[in-house]
Image (cartoon, rainbow, N blue to C red):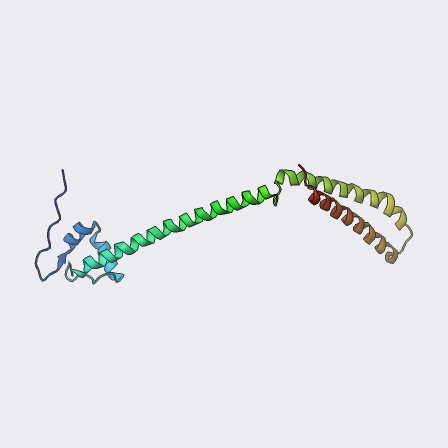
Length: 167
């Protein structure tokens, strides 16, 4: 059964009843009063709204729609940004600026294992026998030399890998 058309405003000093405004807008009288308190239109006087209430309702609905559209616009901008960043990443990857983690980890583990083995060999077989009977002042330069040797090996390993990354 179709809804009856809302009643036309009665000509009582050019005002609109709360019921009429509710039937035209679909909002409750409580919501109308909240909007009036927020300054969208003048509040009702003895349950009747001035015709300015309709203009205020239109302004409110336009502003509310713009706010909702702005939320969608923000989401669309975020989506476009993610797509752009993804495309840039793919471009950089095809250009060779990035290396996959799966390729990087084994190479770094290999360098680290070689560095560890060298450090153990140097400390146990070379440095320890040299340190016996030396003073602290004599030991420190030998330890620094061993550390520099291990760091040099690490730099060379990384440089070699950077010159020709794993396939």
